[in-house]
Every structure is written in C-alpha cells, then in structure tokens.
Amino acid sequence: MSDTTAGLLQAGVLVAALAACYRPMGDYLARVFTSAKHLRIERGIYRLIGVDGDAEQSWAAYLRAVLAFSGVSVVFLYAFQRLQNHLWLSLGLPAVEPGQAWNTAASFVTNTNWQSYSGESTMGHLVQMAGLTVQNFVSAAVGIVVAVALVRGFARSRTDRLGNFWIDLVRACLRVLLPISILAALVLIAAGAVQNLDGVHTVTTLVGQHQDITGGPVASQEAIKELGTNGGGFYNANSAHPFENPNAITNLLEIFLILLIPVSMPRAFGRMVGDNRQGYAILSAMAVLWLVSVIAMTVFESQHHSGAPAAAGAAMEGKETRFGIWGSALFAVSTTLTSTGAVNSFHDSYTPLGGGLTLLNMMTGEIAPGGVGSGLYGMLMIAVIAVFVAGLMVGRTPEYLGKKIQAREMKLASLYILATPACALVGTAVAMALPGPKESILNPGAHGLTEVLYAFTSASNNNGSAFAGLSVNTDFYNTALGLCMLLARFLPIVFVLALAGSLSRQTPVPVTAGTLPTHRPLFVGLLVGVIVIVVSLTYFPALALGPLAEGLA
Image (tube, rainbow, N blue to C red; front, side, top):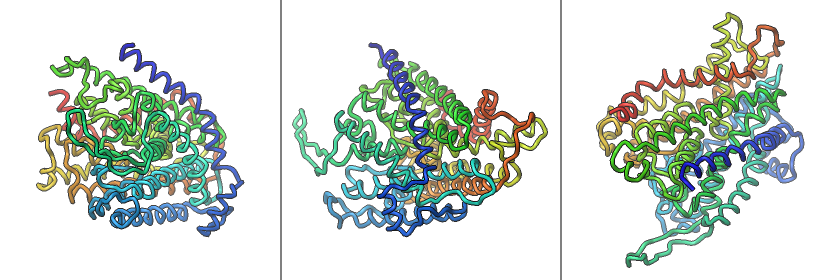
C-alpha cells in the first residue's frame, strides 16, 4: 500500500469516527451540564468542599472561582516539584529548579504543557501522576466549563446566573474526562504503551553500549494529555516515543482523542441554545479551516525541493517512519489547531512553509476545532465580531442568537481578540531586543526569528509545542513564557465570562426579516473570512520576517 493510499485511508477513518461521535458525544455533553441530578459521589465532593449543589453564581463569582482554583493549583504544583526529592517514587531525582518549577506549574495549570525539560529525567512518578496528570484533568475541565458558561449566557435571559463553577468542574472531570481517559488508557496499554511504576532499567544495546530506560505510568498520562488537549509527554520525545505512541493505530487513536471533545462541543452548543443548526454552522467553519490546513501541510511536507527530501521521497527529516508524511502531517495540524501541543514529529525540521503553517494554525486562536472548551468559546467570540461586521454592512444593530451585540459586547470581544497576540508579539519583540535571550538562538537569521516567534505564540495560545532549535530552559524564557501562559489563558477567560454575564441579562429580541441567519453557508463563509482577515492583519508582518522569508529564499 502506498503512503498516499494509507494516508487517505487514515484520514477517512478519522473523519468517519469523528462524524459518528459528533451527535452522541455532543448530546451527552449537553446533558451533563444541563441535568439537575447529582451523582452520589458528586454530592459527597460538594459536602467535602462546602459547595451547595443547587446554588448558582453570577459571572463575577464564577470568574473568581476559576481564578482562585487556578491560583491555588499553581502554588500546589510549584511546591510539589520543589519538594520532589522528599516524596515517594521520586526515583532519586533532585528537586526541580525554581525557574523550571515556576514555568512548569504555569504551563500545566493553563492547559499549555510547555516542557523545557526531559520528563523522564526530571520528574519522579508521583509528581508525574499526582501533579502533572491531575492538572491535565482539571485544566481541561476549566476550559470546558468556561465554554459552557458562555453558552448559558446565550441560552438564558433576564438573569445574572451562569451556573456554578465547582459543580461544572466536578461534572466535567467525573462524567466526561475520567471515564473516556480510563477506556483510552486501556486501549493504549493493549496496543503497546507502557504503564507501570518501574524505575530506571539499564540495558545493553546491540553494539555493546549501556542505555538507561525509564518506565512509568505512561499510558494513563498519554490518554488525558490527548483527550484534554493538554500536550506535553512523559518522555522528552513526546508522542514520537514508542512507549507513548507505539504504532500507526495508536497514532490515529491519539489524533482522534485530540479532536473528539472539541468537535463535539458545537453539538452541545446547539442543543443548549435550542437550535442544532447553530452547532452545525460552527462545526462547518472549524472543518473548513482544518481540512485546508491538512491538505496544505501534506503538500508542503511532500515536496522534494532539495537533495535530502528528493532522496527520501519526501521531507522525512524529524519524522517517524512508522507514521510517514501523512500520519505526521495529520498529527501536526490537529495538535496545532487545538491547544494540544503534543507532537509525533520534529516541527523544527519541517519545510519552511510546513513549519510556518503550524505557526499560523496557532495564530488563528486554535479554534479549528480548538482546545476542549477554548475552541468553542474562541469561535463564539469570533462569531460575535462577524455578526457585528455584518450589521455594519447593512446598517442595523447586530444580533446573535436573539441577543443584541452592542458597545459592551464588542469591547469585550475585541479585548479577547487582542489579548493573545499582544502576549505573543510583545514577548517575541522583547526576546529579540535583549542581548541575553539572543544567545539562546542556535539558528540565526529568519529561522531563528521563527523559533522565538513560535515559542511565544505556543505559550500565549496555550499550545505547548515547540521548535527545538532554541534553548528555552533559561531564567528569561522560563519567566517570560510562564507569564505569557498565565496572561493569555486567564485574560481571555475574564472577557468570555464578562460577555456571558452581559448576554444572560438581556431580553431576547425577536427574529425579523432583517435578522442575519447565522446557520447558513453565507454566515459560515463570513466567519471563516473574519478569522483569516484578523489573523492576517495581526501576524502577517511577523510571519513575513520569519517563515515566509525563509520559505521564499
């Protein structure tokens, strides 16, 4: 079977599996967050943390709960790493250095999972399990519940209540993320992924050399890192490591897990607002961007513009022969169009245009289909801007799902759009201006700029993937990237929840002949156009100096 045939087959299987899960998974998500019933274990957790299971919060109280929970999580994870050498299953590893511990704590709490360290040689098993993996669950759950709160803002009227953060968080973890992760981990173990509590094994290689191989709870972390669009990995090689991703079947499974919840969230949105057509419209815009990106990435990586790619038949440097061009391109697109950041190939070794596309995917805001929750609320914020633009064109007050988009709503949506690019571009400018960070660039010129831009874009979009030709385990990068992760995660959440509160207080306006239908292909095209224009105007100068300059040289 040729690589092209195999690639088309796996892409077809992936799309078919996601299509089959769209309705049942989306309907289940909607039921989870609209049901009035509490499970017995949930009621026990509510009593333990002192939460009234039937109480709801205003947007401000909901936001305070998000920020308080996340702040405590950063402190806890930082302390966990600093005390690692005193903990069980530390494998004899020392405490994590302060700058690295800060960066990692910020990274995993913000669903970024940026790793400037080698996991198997830096973190003991207990820190991996009770620290990093737990944050993989709760940080993903935070993204989901913020999206649910925004959907409630559209669905409700004449109220200032958006639900209860603590109830939503518990339900997201116990009813959605945990059961699917357990099933996925079992499948990964059966397919060859490692799952144990072993320490370091020293083995003799075929050439007589000695090599240390670390075991550990890999499959369980792998399952939630993909399902929760977290990223990172137990090993430094990430999902290219055979212990994390043994074969082409597990590769396809991991891509499926990355996309499952983000693809299903538009269905939950449609169900919760009472119009499934709205969910299909959002999904269509996501699908267009994803499909175009997959085709472009595969074309770029299949080119033979120099001696090595021509000899290999494609640009295979940095890619696993187990996965080939198609499996690598499909993974790269899916991981950078969501907030995952897990990689099964070396993005720094991609062709200039292919590497530039991974960068562009993150710059879109990772909304096609985006991270768990963050993809949906990002797309809905873009939809608010799209209906505003349409309203300007026809000279009437814009409306979306029966809610007027007025000055307050537009200010919040605009601030949301500006927050992430500001972190990414300002961070890149500072890094390029200071002499110290410049020394971390191993490839000067256009590619070096691309590496720095990629690092700050990845951190600011809470992605976590990286171009590896940049030494980022320094005081400057650990501090700066950690700040970008926190600011670019929680500032947008502030604007999302404020918008949800503003919308929930409105009285719905009736549909008239002048109302823009937001479930038809025209609106889908407008939505995609606004995304492309906003990204182009914001990032084109930086892209022109980096990957475009390198690709056209």
